[in-house]
Image (cartoon, rainbow, N blue to C red; front, side):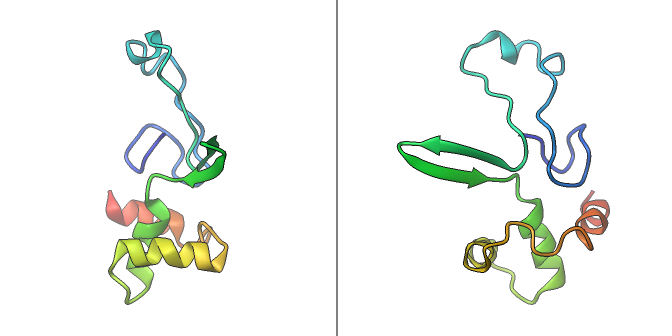
Length: 96
């Protein structure tokens, strides 16, 4: 899954890495190149994950500094990236 400093576009969704970028790793069948965010089923449950950019962005524009609380809030709000597209690119540039 690409993150904030990886060779990918800075706005979400980020596409999975091309296999040529991770040639050694992609030789193994256990390697799964995933987008960011990534949705999958695991043990009969749907799992949605991201590399953390939305939480870091929320920390920059709110008074809440607990990343876990902000992640929980995105679930309560039903919105994975509540500040995008207005501030996500700006936050990416400030964090790098």
